[in-house]
Image 1: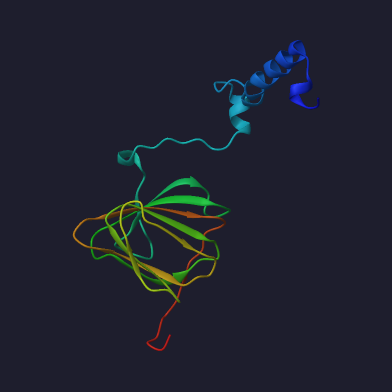
Image 2: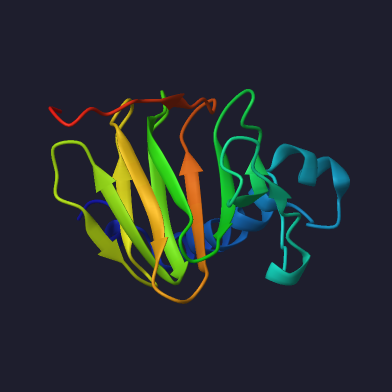
Length: 162
């Protein structure tokens, strides 16, 4: 026999004991700040405490940075938009992922038909894909957006021929 089944009963229990203890060795004590410093950023933010600020470019949009640093790398934002808020055609160098939490979001991407996403709806905009979105209907929209690298935005003027 070979592998795990070939081990004697005593050795098999020893291996199982080591395997069972391994996650605790790697994770360490969560209260230990040295261990916490080596792990990923941790955050728990109730929606009511999210630090929403007015968007500089789109006056009807508010955003709250939830994780990451958009100036240097990946980031995650919450976005709030009232009914009628429209974000014009643009693109990002980063890939953008969007998940709708509340409301109806009309999402358009160049080369594809526009789709209305509701709670749980998901869209991926590849790097430099021209896209837009609007909060339609009577309810405000709440969305999560993530960017896989440094954030930038390039506004695009679409003419009727494109």
